[in-house]
Length: 165
Length: 185
View 1: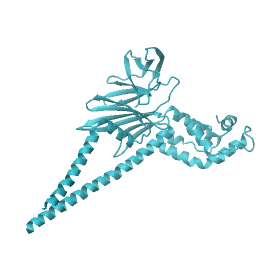
View 2: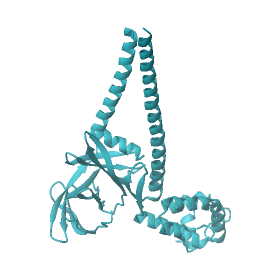
View 3: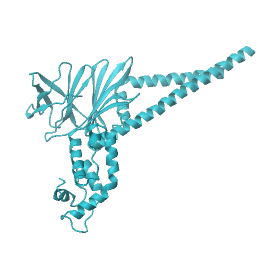
View 4: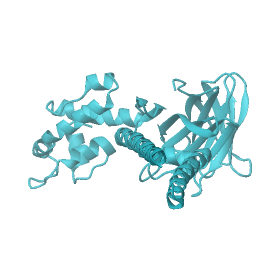
């Protein structure tokens, strides 16, 4: 009777340990998968923003991808360079582009955003095109660089007037 | 051990076995596996055009993705390991339309080379004439929404320059384009 009880207890213990182990492995894999998905999502954002080509060689342990710029990317970078020539404080990421490090390129653009409003104000002041009261938001520059769109009035004419475009 | 306990233990093992079975079944289904990988890549707003089985153990899935214009063209290579289809490689190209809406990209996969691109909805046939005098007829495929793309799978030597003859449904030549292709990928 006692031996049977011990045997039952051992069976239950083995079952509990097995289930705990399986749960541990499963949860660990789930966390790992979520981290991978987060990284893949960051690559997706980058590809979408700079219109890059991407090759996925491995999706985990570790993620291995190659990125390649497209004609759209070159045009985007030309617009960025033109702004940085006009306003040197708006950094152009020569080295990061050369190293094909697009996360760093994006970081430089993000860091540049603090200068955007001042540069837009300067452009509207220096140009003879817009009336005195005309102003634009900092988004005028980011929209111009990323989407080649002129969301603010007079902006396209100002770019030509200041020899940026 | 009481009957009740036995039932509980059998029930737990049953659930585990059913879960494993369902997981293997879902991995075994090619279209479901493709959807899982596209989701994993976070290629949202996607449209799967076709899954082409090269042989029993290798397949390529063609799709477009991206908001709002689905302007990225994706290809996923899957390989069968045992009973399960697994990810092997994927490529996504940003599509740049020229005025006739034709794009061409190259990617090398295991034992095959792939040429593919987006296509104007007016085109129904794509003939490829390479600079080394080979001629191929590309596959033209259509999404559920009526958008078109083309692809050509080669097992022999790749070509770098080709003339693409684009025809409509009546066989009328709409355009002939000489294209130099980047073979780096």
